[in-house]
Every structure is written in structure tokens, then in C-alpha cells.
Length: 261
Image 1 (tube, rainbow, N blue to C red):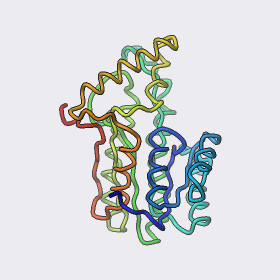
Image 2 (cartoon, rainbow, N blue to C red):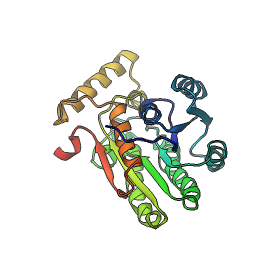
Image 3 (cartoon, helix red, strand yellow):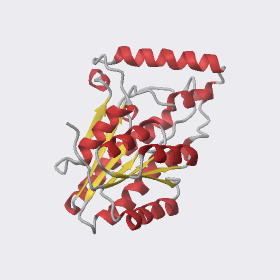
């Protein structure tokens, strides 16, 4: 049975699609009031409408400090509090055949969203939680931040930094009643893989074949024959949101892929 979040208020950044959408829907089913924070207004508004009256959309660029501060302020004023902050928003770099060919043109943007955005979301939500009885912060990383690999070096570096940051800040925020944990998904079909392949200059058909081949390899690398889903990540987020005794943890949701490395 999934934990209940009835009466709690949560924010999910990057909540309009992919893993974020799965977390939003999971939290709504668990009884929470959820703010979907995203830069894709149409997807966010459509999701809020489909999820019902406990879902709310807010435009927010997580790499913009003013946006994040406003997001927390408006959420707490409108909904009366903030219990769970899920820093999920993330983007990938364009894939390169070799790091020697990588112009690092995506570095600043990826780090701004994937790392700076997580740090801003953690700081601003913790500032509120620290004076309002504590809460749970959940940062979405990736097994790409745990395992070595090629193709998207800046993305991997950003996710590794999220993991280390989350563990570090957990030690400071614990005494304030705030848990900080990480989820490291792997091999879960979302649009982010296809977006990263665009840098290879492939045709649409070739991109589809590359994605299918990569997905097949990921499935074959998993000990569990279970096709990962955003709902799996949502279940992990629900557990961490309702587990006051867990902090500084990195929960992998990858079918056991990282266990074989």
C-alpha cells in the first residue's frame, strides 16, 4: 500500500512531463495538494486540469533564483504550507561520439538547470520548512551520476554533483527536521534520451533506431525483467516523502542495473 500524503502540500519541478508527471500523478493519488512547476505552460496546465482540483500549475524556470523564490512564496501563501519539495527538472546535453568532439556548449545551461536549479529549490524550500516544522526534499539524479559512461559527460557530471550535494546538505538540514534524499533512476523511457541524440546529426528514423537499440540494451543490462516506468519513480518519491527517518540516501530505481556495475 502506498503511503498517504493526505493534507500535505508538494511541489514538483519539471512536473509537466516524463518522470515529473509520474510523480505528480502519484502524489495526487496519495492525497496531496500538488503544484506542477514547469516552463511548458500548455503541458503543465493540461496536466493540472486532468489531475483535478488538487493540482495547480505554476510557471517557473528553476535556474532563475527569483522564479524559485516566487514559486515557494506563492505556494505557501495559496495552499497554506509546503511539506514536500521534489527537485526533478532536468535537461540533457547533446550526445557526442567522443568527448574530444564535445564543444561543451551545453555546459552552462545543463549545470544551471540540473545542479543550480536543485540547489535553489533545496535552499528556498528549506528556508520555509526550517521555520514551519520541517519537511522532505527529494532530488532527482540518475544512475548516470553513479556509473561511469560516455556520450553525455556534462549530464553525468551534473547528476553526480546532485548526489553529493544532496548527501552534504542532508547533514546540515537534518537537525531542522528536514530530510534530503536522492532518487537515481535508470533505463526509464522518457523524452530526454531522444533529445540528447539530436547532437549526432541523425535523421528522425536513425534517432528512433538509436533510441530503440539503447532501450533494448538497457533492458538486457537489468537483472529485473521489469520495464521501468515513471510510476516506479513516483513510488520511490512517495516512500521518501513519508519516511522521516531516512535522509542522505540515494535510492536507485533501475531494476538492479547499478548493482551489476
